[in-house]
Length: 91
Image (cartoon, rainbow, N blue to C red; front, side, top):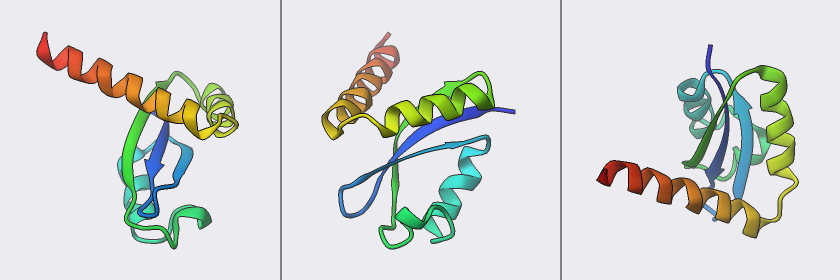
């Protein structure tokens, strides 16, 4: 079972952070309006950040940490992952 913490960008530009053990299903639920109450009126949502976590407990702790970051810190996290992904595709 895979544990991930993720960040979504909502259609209104806001960010939503969550935890799941089934990312594909969770994204589908968010976009169908059946996910978190926060995202229901803000669809479609776009996945902008994914962090694999070894366990449920560490995943929930990491979700809590990210949720308490300011917007600028969250964007830095998103950009650092995008840069790493871009770099790894070039090499």
